[in-house]
Length: 201
Image (cartoon, rainbow, N blue to C red; front, side, top):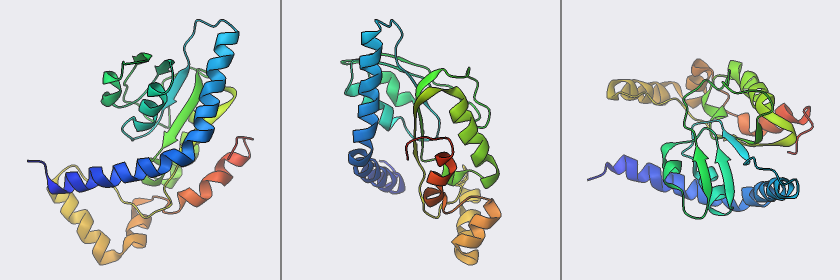
């Protein structure tokens, strides 16, 4: 029997990603299609390179692969390994530090960076953004989603979770966030972090 908290978390996640997809898809699929057409016109034998930097479950890459014929995905979660129908897909799953990506410059056609900037310390956000730009092909696209909500880290053990929950409710979300060093409003600040790079917001 699955844990009730797990069921609730998965249900909430599904609602979230299903709600985001209609907003994300026009720009993202348009860009993906443009890459595909460009490669075909140039008779390119190279597949489109997609780098997914973050802590999501590969949901966005899964949608892209299922709706297109060719894709090469570079960091994602294990669920992508099972996606083979209707697509020629090569998947590399790799644990790495987002502040120092182990990839060459200009190697990705699309960089995805979703659901993570709200859960890292403020001090590394700039470094993560710089790394995303570093691995991206010139004039291509970074697709970012950063939640503008109050979130905290979750420990991997029960004792840690209990302590964090105690801190949250006794100190309040803003004091807890300040102590953790996270930016509780990164969502609304995200456009200003990429405008000066002349990327589409």
